[in-house]
Amino acid sequence: MVLVLVIGDLHIPHRIHDLPAKFKKLLVPGKIQQILCTGNVCDRETYEYLRTISPDVHVVRGDYDESSFPLSVTVAHTPIRIGVTHGHQSVPTGDLDSLNAIARQLDVDVLVSGHTHTFQAVEYDGRFFVNPGSATGAWIGSYNGDPTPSFALMDIQGPVVVTYVYQLIEGEVRVEKIEYRKEPEPVREAPRPTTMPQSIPSSPGPTQSVW
Image 1 (cartoon, rainbow, N blue to C red):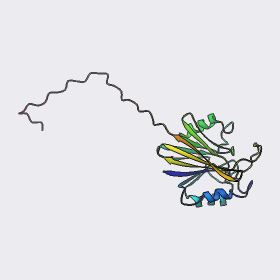
Image 2 (image 1 turned 30 degrees about the vertical axis):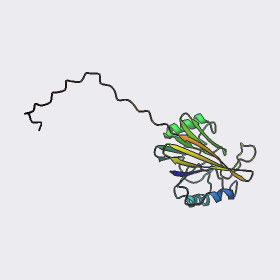
Image 3 (image 1 turned 90 degrees about the vertical axis):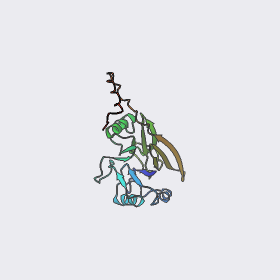
């Protein structure tokens, strides 16, 4: 079992000063093996905070990040391959067909993306798409109102990914569970011989040595 924190679009300190206190109480060191961040971390202090939760942190560059994070990363938890991208490469924003094209390009089973500041976890075309939303509930120009703060935990057990989304709604943390199972690869049958086998030689006689 591998427990992976999926988080992003924090926008600290430009749009908000910190993570919600109730989220910080949940994100304690020693329980999470890996962090996948969809970007827009925006300051080094926040990045270093993530490293206190788990030293295995993978961050992609968001459209407001000035750091030299990569545009995408892939990680493997056999047999599951996970890709991470910020999501601003998807046109239209959040479009599943566009995200599916990115997933095919990265050759992954699960694609993690952000940018919309809205949580989503959905299976599409045999792949699983996860958007953890904004962990701080940072505002977004194209959104009316304040986004709901959210993050996700992925519990990976072989071909099964159980995703728990944590949302801060009316001051309380609410949890929802979504499960994805990778279907096994189809087994190809060996080609049948097109010629008849030659006759099998008879066994040696009792006085003939087989050595």
